[in-house]
Length: 325
Image (tube, rainbow, N blue to C red; front, side, top):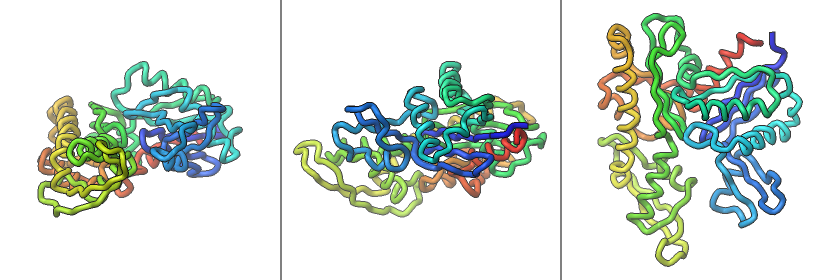
């Protein structure tokens, strides 16, 4: 029986940490700001993310996780270590059992990078769980059912889809298309069509307020501010739902195509069950307007949205942790 169990959902956009002794202790952006003069950590999480596009020259903001995997082991270690230092819980890491989520189709190098991060934190035991499997568990799916369930987890930097039957993954796929892919598409559109350079905070706001992949959605308008790419001066432009839809739909189609590939990978009997039961969708990236309607049209299957989409994976990790507490 483990004395200390820690769950870590280290995502591209958000990191969530849970301790068996304290409950939820961290739920903030996966961002770290470094003072280039001293090399010390200036801020992490929410405060670091607020500095994106606004920080002075000597403060650099980094995203240590990109496309769902560890991009910089050292920065990830410093990021998570600083979380525990700030919370005065750094001793909790030593000798603990850590459960962490990971994309389904993680390469050996990417998996080793995640293991290196957790080992450097001082964990005694490390358990890596599939994000799709944990999302299903978090949504209350009966993991022992032979009929199975098809889970689509649309995260910030990656989307995972897994067919789960009898408590294990029967087939799984991943694509490096997630919530941030939609943000970057909006940034490119504003630059190429409006001569306006906008940052990730502004593009995400536009996505959530007027972005939609539903062709029948109401056309809405939003004024966004940024920098004129020609003059270099502050400027603004009007974006509309109708303008953004053509650049967002291809990304949603990639997610739908990946889901279809999972259905093609499973045995016919299981595929038949999955088509009838539909797709359980979770993850913060699924919050973009019209995603449910779009997937229903593309996949011709029932789409069920998890009750707590952003926290689905962490809810599953907490349930899995009960086995080790």
